[in-house]
Length: 280
Picture 1: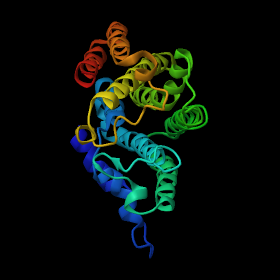
Picture 2: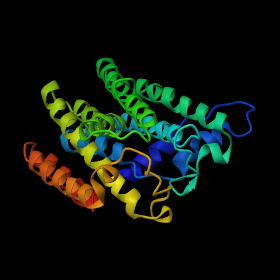
Picture 3: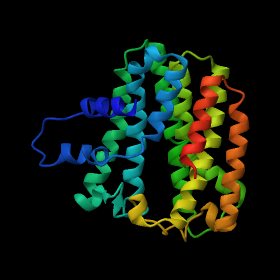
Picture 4: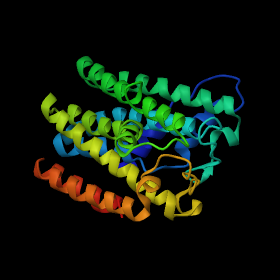
């Protein structure tokens, strides 16, 4: 399925006609160097479990989510934020080109994601609902707010409740969004979509706790981006210590495995597979 998504991505990323010397190359760079495609995988797996006949249609929504995620990474790496030289084992856009190019490519991806959704071969009502879900979770009520809090409160310690709020928005919302969009495409009603979304928020928090642990314990070569640079940031390792963060992660895994039992068998199996394979 992910191989099919990669092929779809390469075909459907925009290629514009202009005399700019490297706009198209820069536009594709972050996609060409790979990535886990975790959010598209969540969305597509939910659709595959609920209504596999719609899997090809769902590729458009999966690509839109990945474009939003990628734009956020480009911004996160900028000198005004994390000033990171590497992402996915390759130079970041502002290093490969310049800061203006990185900002504008990210802006283009953010906008083009909704163009991709508008092209999705489904009814207009579903496309509009998907646009609403994605924009809510990526914008001022979601990822952008989380990033703003992360930047503003760097070197200003937050409480556990505040830290959870930060990462539920910065990381959790887009992961939850992917699950909800998959449920919507798969034909689930609003109540069931909310169940997927709530599971996704908890999964997003687990994802961030695990990412903080990786940052503290792995090398840059192992993960393809700078590590051990969160010493001034509000991370779960800084708040609870490494052993405390590991304990929090393991507790969250147990909680989510119990919660996954409330879904049907196919979805439960998928969620347990995600938990077993991605958080070791």
